Image 1 (cartoon, one colour):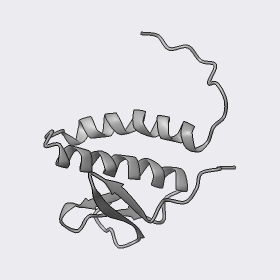
Image 2: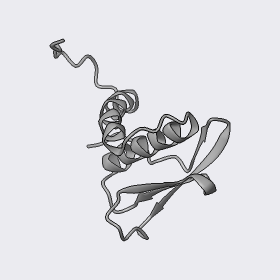
Image 3: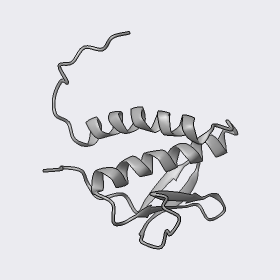
Amino acid sequence: LSRLPPLPGALQLFGCLWTVRLTTERSDGALGCTFMERNRIDIDSTLALDVQWATLCHEVLHIVDFQLKLDLSEELISRLDTGLWEFIRQVLEPRGPAGMACDR
């Protein structure tokens, strides 16, 4: 059973308040979308809670990319969101040491 909290209704990023809105209005197949001009992140409300959180991580990376003018590709943002979500999930759902070694 997931111990994840619901998504926050707003986030403070780069000194701006960003509204997080759960919606079913997306028709393009995207799980989420960031509206830079409105300081709003839309997330598909029909997704499982863990997928909503992962999507929020992805959208936050779009904001970081935009604010820092990094010009990251969608592919790179998708790669980065995997590691970011893994870290955030451990913070939100502490389970103790993973017990798995990593090859470097």
